[in-house]
Amino acid sequence: VSPVARQVTCTAPVNIAVVKYWGKRDAKLILPSNSSLSVTLSQDDLHSRTTISLAPTHVTDRMWLNGSECSVPANERLVNCLAAARRHREALEKANPELPRWSTWGIHIGSENNFPTAAGLASSASGYACLVFTLAQVLELPLTGPELSRYARLGSGSACRSIMGGFVAWNMGTQADGTDSQAYQVAPETHWPELEALILVVNDAKKGTSSTVGMQTTVATSALAAHRFTHVVPERMRAMETAIADRDFAQFAELTMQDSNQFHAICLDTYPPIFYMNDTSKAVVHLVTAINRLMPTIQAAYTFDAGPNAVIYAPRDHMTRLLQLFTYFFPAPTDVSTRDFFNDPYARVPE
Ligand code: PMV
Image (cartoon, rainbow, N blue to C red; front, top):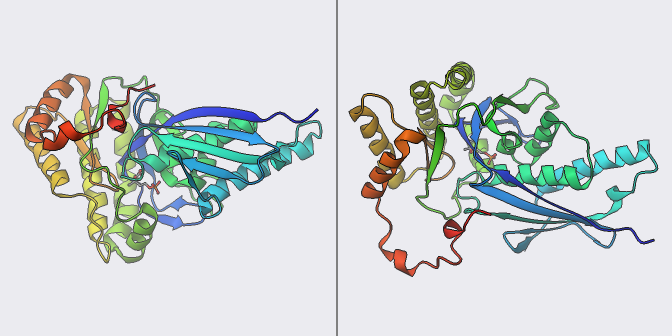
């Protein structure tokens, strides 16, 4: 009987950090210079969808990203994730010779994002979380959440947080081998259902400086970054966990905005400097600041990752008013009539 091919499809959502990860103390194992904390968005929103097929007839490992084939050997992190999963499967097969020898089969991966890839919208977080989760399913690896998180970390640091839902912290860990550098859930998605995220796509082009190169240069050149790692983030992590536990939006929002500001400050302090925010991003900061000043309580928090796009966190009650203000001050581009809505990723109905 010829062996039967196996195929599994999974989706994983993006996460948007409120205490940012920026800096590695070990680039190979992807061990961070500071702990971080994020909110995992709902699966219905921005997500990656990955299908992995495993077959004895797959001669080599191959991968298609958003429909185009990309080279597997050229992507060291992808190779590391595949090798780690295969080694794990091999160990299981050695311990139990009855198991089918899937570790010897070729792997084909098809992955797509329902949002712009590599535009500072956390595509590597959802992409690698999805890859690792799907690999574990197709190879039947009995992995716990923290173990999956450590595997995902090998692909992209922020991916280790997308393995879990709700509010998720990545403990930087102290071990040199990374065995304690993994995510844990601070609170489940049901904890604070009123909290919503609004994504303002300022520019969907691929970002200029990759996070890998950016982080490396920041750690090597920024004195402010060294201060952030030791004197700011540890206390901010504690304060953020408390704000989340208390569902204290004012505190959550202030910490989120301060941390986004400091992340972009260490990018500016990098030599040569890195700019991710553009003039539109800065106008978003001004608008949110003005709204928060004019109202009796804090209405919204902005945060920016390695790109110009804004993520706005706000309680659901404030969202309609905020949307009105954002669309008033940032009207749709005039060439909107020429957009191809049938092929526009933003116009896609969530599956
Ligand atoms: O996981 P990476 O290498 O794409 O780094 C992501 C870094 C930020 O998105 C800017 C911050 C974070 O904590 O997600």
